[in-house]
Each structure stands twice: as structure tokens, then as C-alpha cells.
Image (cartoon, rainbow, N blue to C red):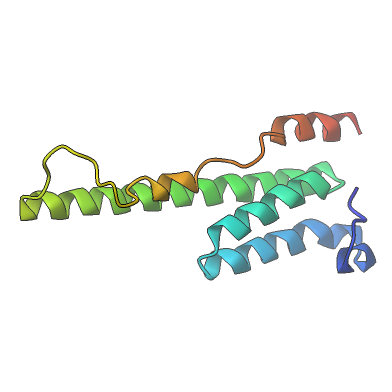
Length: 121
């Protein structure tokens, strides 16, 4: 439940979703996107109200959408540069060209089941 380990167990329940969201935002501002994703996933698993779940899921989806847009823009810019330089030969860059996409793969697929748990509560 929401009374997990650490300092969060001492906080009022109505602060729980806000604090999780602020923690994820702090990681995003530092460019630590995997840590931000971990915070969102843990938050979604641990909040005890549908309101907090909905707020966090919405923020998480906006984060993922923004990340996807940034990666797509980065890839488009890279392709434009290669075309301008005449480098593009149709072969993918083997130096981690797909690394950006790896961050988009969720670590855990439990969000739909978590939604069902909260609806029944």
C-alpha cells in the first residue's frame, strides 16, 4: 500500500501523489530518464487512491510521449546531417543507433493490472 518504507509513511495521504510526481520531475530535469521511469512505476504500484494513480499515470504517459518526441527529433536531425554530408548509405549506424530507443521499452507491464486493483478497492 501507500504506507511503504521510508519517509513517505509519515506524510499525509493527500501528499503522496504530488511527492512522487515531484521526485520524478527532479530526475527528468537532471536527464536521468531511467530513474524517472522507475519512480513513476514504483509510484503507480504503491499509491492507494485512484486520484493519485490517475495523476501519476497521466504524468508518466506525458513523460513517455515527450521522451519519444525528443528521440524522434534527434533521429531526424541526425539523418538530416548525414544526408547533408552525403554519409547515408542505407546501413544503420552500429555505434548505438538504437540505444536511444531502448529507454522507451517499459521494464514492467503491470500498469493495467494495477488499474484493475485500484478500481476494485
